[in-house]
Image (cartoon, rainbow, N blue to C red; front, side, top):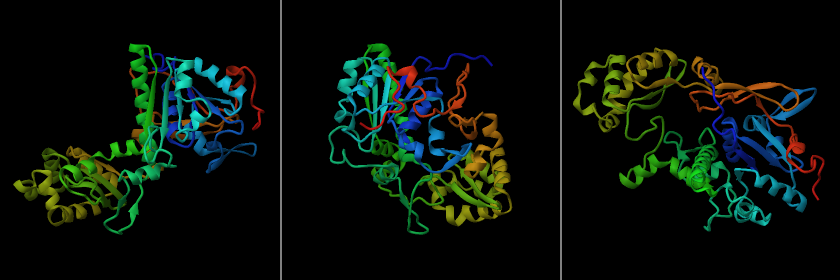
Length: 394
């Protein structure tokens, strides 16, 4: 396969982020070839201390949380409250393309490092802020927020119709959604800079992002005046569309069109249902799901493993899949064939663990390099006018 330079090879990113949303965004930039320099306090960012920790060799441990989010990055240590370190940071800004931060609103201004200061140092700079409720004036601007807060306020947390209990989402959508929206905004700003020569300020709020991701339920409520209760059926307008029990677990089935419905009936031997005009569209199938469709479907699934059922449905052009566990998902032949499992390497010791790789593929491809994670302050000599590794809070 032909190879080329990474798409962001000449882009320099200063990464002031911690927790999940910011580090995930900058990880994606690093995977695309950007030089991502983590700017950490002298004691290291909080992700280095988060559990779970794993053995890294010679009795040392490393945070799995830090490992998975900081591959292909570099690390410098600066106390941005100290005038000398602040000047060192501004020197870095003058040679950078992007700054990403996810402090609470006002922190960068209190450090005298707001966008007005940074853009004065580098008018071509793209600065991205990720916060709970955005940096513009609002009632909630200064509220603390984690992903669950944003998910709950955006209506993404639902009450189970079976138990009456609220159900949190599995992955941290309230962080990962904003991370990807921030990534999109940064790339848009870089494209705009290529035309105008000017930098931009990108303001991403976790709540805004979650509201955007919850578009189906909100549109259903506002336009159709239907507040759908999510259970095993995930889409209020389609059926069968959800997760259903098989002999050894669950199967995802997603029938969204008439051809898929006919394929579903063919796979299950439901010729009588296939001939009914009132089941040809989604609304009719939703109406008759529990009395006509679900009983024979559950009987058919109970006689098959999740993989057998998914293969038979897929052979009839019905979107379907086994519901894998997280560990099973990365070990499938499909994930392996697509190169979705890569090994992240711990700082200093060379131990490695499998994690999901970047999902973005290019043709011609490029070599992203090994997924190394940086020891604290390992790049101070390279980027700073003085080594600040041993700096303590002053």
